[in-house]
Length: 70
Length: 472
Image (tube, rainbow over all chains, first blue to last red; front, side, top):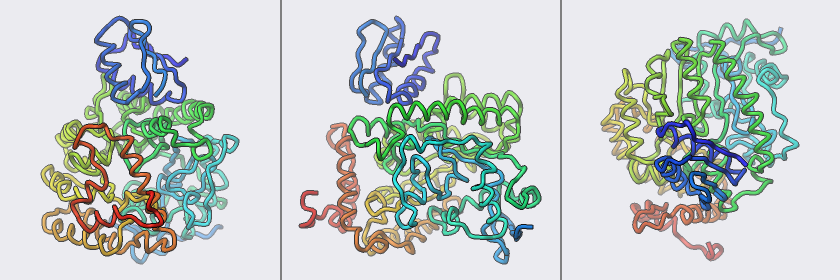
């Protein structure tokens, strides 16, 4: 499964990193994004996923977002 | 000795008495690759695809007699730059251009198909006029050249966050997403979208294409980069290369040319506008086809306020109002925002680079070429009357392009037997896109017909029904 680990990523870099990751790997869903425990980071990731209209997004484990369907 | 006829260029244009009017330096200096690894002489050349046809390919146009469908992954046989550069195909092209022979691959420039200012002028009249003699001297009788590419247009992927209505999945991953979500694709029509194929292509683009480009960057030999995509400001390789050029103090050797949607000018710690003034010269062709709501409609993904801010920051750089260009693709809906568009350019005192929407098929109803001749002429003449008195030389391409429209055959004139059927097909496609992209906000979603309401005759024509096509 394709995974993007955002540990060590600065908040200002999250937007482009997540958008690029999803768009580049869209044919390989599910995609996993590891945000860690920062609520701010989770919010930033969700804002991107909403903007690019990912259709089926879950967070079964806190801080780990899985895009099941675009 | 092969036949050689030297061209004569003066002041950026081929001399009227030049014995060779078709020579171009691009096959000696420049190289292009598409996100699907199709190599071309330049992005405007009309060649035949091997695997995935490109929008402008001769093999994507029935009128050329070369039309063929996209291939399968078995046809995906990408070659390295080294293999391509002095291939039999390239050598043959060089010999023909040296001899002054007009070749169909260069029809976009030969016939000014997309724009009045041609790519040949760019490479031969402006960028590399000083290398014309070298091209003749360093090419042997079978077309082999010892010159290496120093100008790159490498589109490493289709990564792009916009879904501009005149674009498509080959050059936009956001379009690709939408097509996947709505099952608007087939492995036969878009083999590059098959997941297994995508992996193969991505591997080549990453391991071969990006690497050969990176080697050129490190060598310090690059003299021009055309950053285009996809969206180049989303490419990691863009920011990595620019950082390296800057660190090596090589940026001052490079002419930078961008074609960007300008949705972002920052990437992590990097700020694009820190680098541009370091370059030998730079041009930012910021794609924009309408301002405000019309722009956001044509270019789905555009946030006008953000674009405006990013553009103004560029204009504020030294020489910015000569180097920041509004890169306009004229479309049917866009003509209705053209007066505001020109006024914006006048306010900022910036250039407009104008081209027509690519339209070689009559189902491209987003193009004004689908309109009836008399309506098109009336609307274009009205625009010309309003714009001619206010425009400055910086926006002159708008006038040139509008004038050219008056002399370009409409779809009805080009395809008299099929254009009507194709119109209804194309209109249905626009309707489908509108339904997908309608965010449900009342009164917010523009459509082609909403925009055309401004002109009653056009609106009535566009929304007409026909007994044969009642269901559409």
